[in-house]
Amino acid sequence: MWFGAKGAFTRVLPLVVLVGMLLNGAAVQAASEFEAAVSQLSEKSFAAKSAAVGVIAASGDKRALAILTAMQSGDLFFRKNDKRIVFAAKADKGYEITDALTGEALGPVGKRKVRKVSINNRLRAALKGALGSLQLLASDPKIRVAAARALLTNPTADALPVLSRALDGESDPQVREMLTLAKAALEASSGPVEQRLGAVAAMSGSMNPDVWSILGRLAQSESSEEDDRLVANAAEKALHEIESQKQFYALLETVFFGLSAGAVLLLAAVGLAITFGVMGVINMAHGEMLMLGAYTTFVVQQLMPNHLDYSLFVAVPAAFLVAALVGIAIERTVIRQLYGRPLETLLATFGISLILQQAVRSIFSPLNQPVATPSWMSGFYEVNGALSITYNRLYIIIFCLLVFAALLIVLRKTPLGLQMRAVTQNRAMASSMGIRTGWVDAMTFGLGSGIAGIGGVALSQLTNVGPNLGQAYIIDSFMVVVFGGVGNLWGTLVGAMTLGVANKFLEPFTGAVVAKIAVLVFIILFIQRRPRGLFALKGRAVEA
Image (cartoon, rainbow, N blue to C red):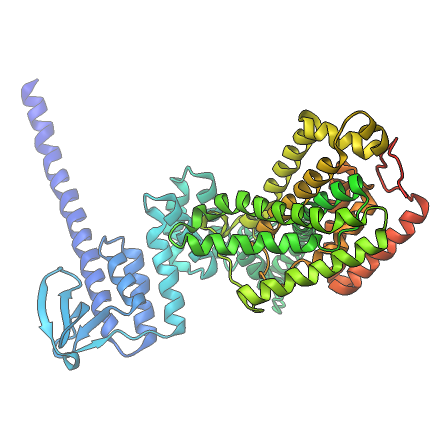
């Protein structure tokens, strides 16, 4: 038995040796082709260099990524005397060079001893695709997604084998989706018609802009071949489906922008709803409370230059206090003397608004002041190629709802809220029950102004901070209050969000100014039918 096993081993051994020699020979040949392709990068012909890039990318050699990356960034050179491809780093009198194939340090050389491997736009596109194919097998999913996206942008037929291999072993859903699109983009251009139609079907419904471009080129094909016409018709049908989805996502984006505009409008109007509802005062200086809140944000950031990411957490309470104190001062010194005379109150508060604007101009100059956006509010979340949600607007919507919820708690669960509601419904009865209506007026005015100051903090993240900031919101705030129902917070919420969304829907068709006029006309007509707004308070005494 041992002799039989020995004989079998003797017969198999030559076969093993032969396979090993073949594999070794293949490896040597592959290495030789790789080195020859690298040497070819010193050629003057861009076509020759483009062919060499394809061979380098398809070789699978671990040195390929570094060489092509250096070539793309302009750090790949060759020595003039022997055409040796080298990496070059700037030194005092020239370059420090390193052999690109062996990694051997070759020391310093003068600038005239080496020449950069030049590239043009076409070769740059080939490099981008080649680097994408090399990075498909990286360990980091983000790198693989970026590589697949690069291949989708600049599809090259040489990358298809690597792409197929990467797709077979990919488990990450996001990477796999991008790899599938990249493979479909490559297969849609050539091959059997069934394969091309399947590739178009795979791209159908995608919200990736690069896919739209690829389908657009396929749909515009002028070839008279039957197969090409079939593919063109399928691509055109896929584009129609994508266009329908794009319109839907554009609608969602408009709603999102409208809600963010409505959120700021709510913060501006809710304080006005409280003061107007409780005190019956038409406060034309309410917009300047927004301005004070925005300038408070600017001042806080100037005092915290090294902590901008945390400045808003300081600016919010600071803006509330500044605006509230100014509001209380206005109520105690001016408005208290004018109760029962609405026209004079309107004129007086309009004059106060002009005084506050001029004071800001004198202190900060009439120029707009820059307010930085914290890093955690910068950027956007890309839902897909047709819909992106900016973080600053998303946080403002969330912040607005939190402030609104906190205000509801104050009005429903605190003694001040109880007294405010009592004065709103019947001032004379509340006074006869021992409620100090004058004190409630001051606190109400301060609360409404403070909330407007908080609105100024949010507004500073969306627009420029200047002396005229509040003027753009005072009329809109009154429209919200009247439309929603004077003194009703839920009506103010619905009114602000409705007007914000309506403005965003109308602006693309009519322009910003005409959109506001159209909304104003609608509110006038609406008030003719419902004089007390959407949600009118019941039992409120009407004072002369």
